[in-house]
Length: 207
Image 1 (tube, rainbow, N blue to C red):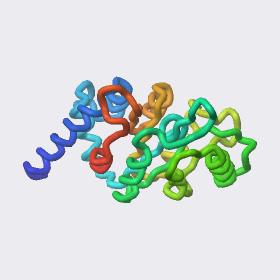
Image 2: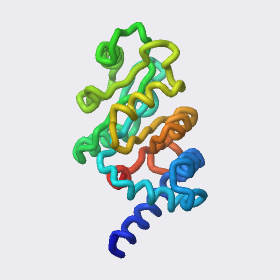
Image 3: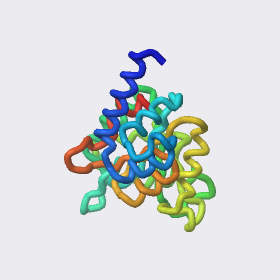
Image 4: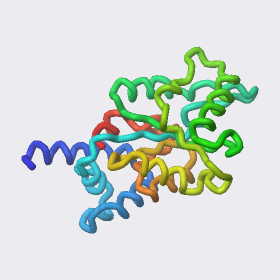
């Protein structure tokens, strides 16, 4: 690798290290990286960036991550979510949902996703409709009560479906972020103070 490429990777590692500052991410990276990289969050992130996987897939929780439910039961995009999804779409980055719904809503992910769409659309009050099309074929829902998050099954399925691509998971709850992290996802807890609402797209592209 030439010196320019090395410097680029170092800069990428520093950028990611600055944004992905949570202890959860550092713990995951330390467990997944080579021995020499453990204990140094920035070096670990740089190692991940250089892993050669150039097809990140970004999975989200739904409620209070991409969607907000008001006190009256109506729903709309979480602040900044619509524009964030639009940028991901423009950059041709695949997205998916990992969300809990009643298993009784259908016998397949497709059926349960269709029911989910009906439920959300029935309460939607936002001026821009939710971008369901972006998620087609990548909406993972529990087949049984035992598969409901925080059980690891849905994340395991998402990772298997993504092949060798790097997988990202963004959610509002620390517990879900921690589970995703333990399963090899690049995790990001959204809507935290003093940091971007969502993982910056430019950094996702580096994965």
